[in-house]
Length: 171
Length: 98
Image 1 (cartoon, rainbow over the protein chains, first blue to last red):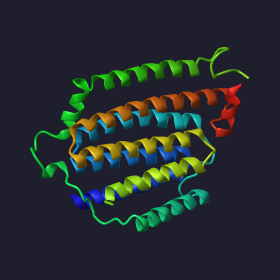
Image 2: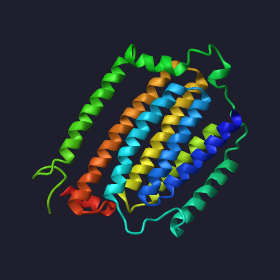
Image 3: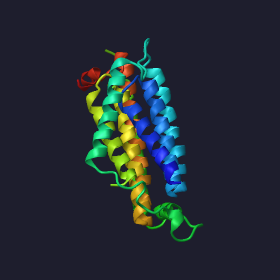
Image 4: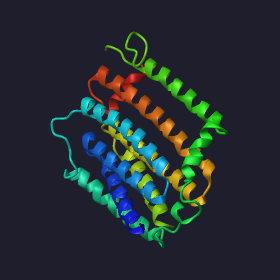
């Protein structure tokens, strides 16, 4: 499993490079979806399957919305792929930066930590119990998240109102 | 430093560098912020896993909620900028202030 984790972490870093090297937004969204997928695979490898499932469903659902927006709002005639000159310059620069980091911080161990599969009960995973706490003792955090989402609803409605007030105006 | 910590540190740094060095499209900056939040999610979940502490699981859930808030506000700004000025370039954002 350690070698699978190594492979998933490598693919995660490559996908993050694909986002951060700033191609056109269509390709950047593809890189972000791949990063989310490999991040979920890493979390499954570490043993927290429920958090990984939540990340996969919610984050990729949100990414679908961002993907549609990026197709609709930033259409270009000649989109820059990863083979474009400036983008590939960024790609190699970031890969070199990862190499420099790996010399500065000495990566000693492959994993270095136990996963959940090694310790304790096999059936009861930690993340199930932890998310369950959000409904019993961590109730104020849940209320805070709900209040934040309600506030954001009004913020979005105010930003895109479109009459004389708001950010959207006919110039 | 283990491999997981190293990957998370370097990917967070690269996302932050990508956001600071690129200033044409607004949605590319949003994508870089999203990847930073994804890295933070993985970091908090790994923190929960390695310390074997159950109560920290609330932290990635809260982070996911607030990243949804951030994405929605960013997309609202994107829609406002695009429908008003017909482009999503970052240099039209300072026209929104008047």
